[in-house]
Amino acid sequence: MKISVVGCGYLGAVHAASLVELGHQVVGVDVDERKVGALCQARSPFYEPGFQDLLEHSLASGRLSFTTDVGDAAGARVHFVCVGTPQKHGEYGADLQFVQAAAESLLPVLEAGELVAGKSTVPVGTAARLADMFGDKVPGALLAWNPEFLREGFAVRDTLHPDRLVYGLPSGADGDTARALLDEVYAPIVARGTPKVETDYATAEMVKTAANSFLATKISFINAMAELCEATGADVKLLADAIGYDDRIGRKFLDAGLGFGGGCLPKDIRAFMARAGELGADQALAFLREVDNINMRRRIRMVELAREVCDGSLLGKRVAVLGAAFKPDSDDIRDSPALNVAAQLQLQGAVVRVTDPAAGDNIRRSWPQLDVVDSAEEAAERADAVLVLTEWKQYKELDPTSFGRIVKQKRVLDGRNALDRDTWTAAGWSYRALGRRAG
Ligand code: UGA
Image (tube, rainbow, N blue to C red; front, side, top):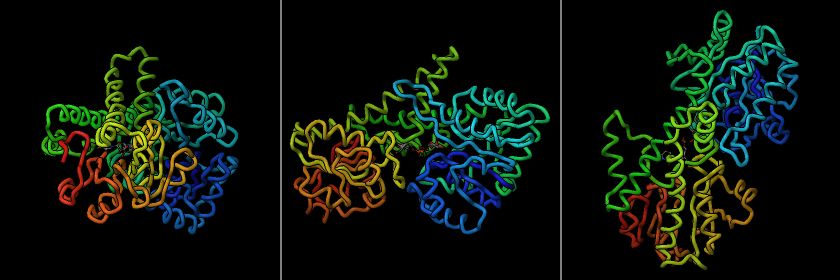
């Protein structure tokens, strides 16, 4: 099937290449010439494990192309909308200008019987509005909402092996046509028996924001427990293990630490609250404000902890920050808790050196005031404290004995509860972490 994918960021580029893997012919459209240029030359514009290989493979098949000209989307039977919905400046709501622009850009190429399938995370009610627009301008064109649940770092796997498919469909015969087209797009995935939920637009839109809100709530729950552990001397890691054995609770997303960041969870819970307010249902989501508060408090607590271990003052103290991406296996620094802490430490007078295996260039571009170095060893040279703020594998595997020879003071702060406390303390380090006793 010929398919177009409008928006070639983390979501769209991976989706486009994955659709080729599923047997289709795909054109990826983006307004960003640099991004399109890189993709055409088989260079991934972002760090995502497995994507570079997938991109090369898909391009080599001759069935994948990228363009800035939406005219090339003509003739596609399905057009996926994969553009971003960032938080509006100075407000909680989602900025829908890119979704609107993408949808409008398709109007000249769209024909009756073709399907526009939205994948972007949007406030509930957006799909119905877009369906009205398409209905007015291109009679016979169809719209479905087909949310995406991929995680950065696992984007390729999550796209090719999703744990469920959600189709938000129009009613009646249009719904049958849209379903048939999506089933054809995802044929190998459907054939595997992947669970499929078919529903209306509003439910499909809400599935996505509800899922991300639940995940954010789970993380903030364990981080609230971490605050209590700090007050009582209990250990949040063991607490999470113990409650996680109950499979009604589950251990996943119960890793206490610096909390959630990135381009999705923080802005999605805020956009959800804003939309609930517009709908007169703000009380229903009032708890998400607390989820957000707990999350932001962890960053402040980390800075306090750093001050504490630096004998009460950060002024002139050399602090090494290991990890700056919002999570490991990503170069994404959007709303990164690690970078937030690094910047606060620097503003409070510390001499901060940041390093990250993948995000270095992004930090240099967006945070030129931070000193970014290429290795953990360079960052830690004569450091008064070492902060591990993103749990990259290479930091978890550091040898505390040899690493201890580089620093001035063997003080480590484990912002992600990712290091083996006993190994570090045995090597003479003082170990501090959020929600756990000092070691
Ligand atoms: C999230 C969702 O997990 C995806 O299902 C969704 O498709 C995506 O948003 C999206 O809306 O596009 P992602 O932002 O890639 O995916 O990252 P997560 O793996 O959810 O992690 C989010 C943040 O939570 C990270 O900063 C991570 O370090 C933090 N986290 C995660 C914790 O602090 N503790 C945990 O136990 C788990």
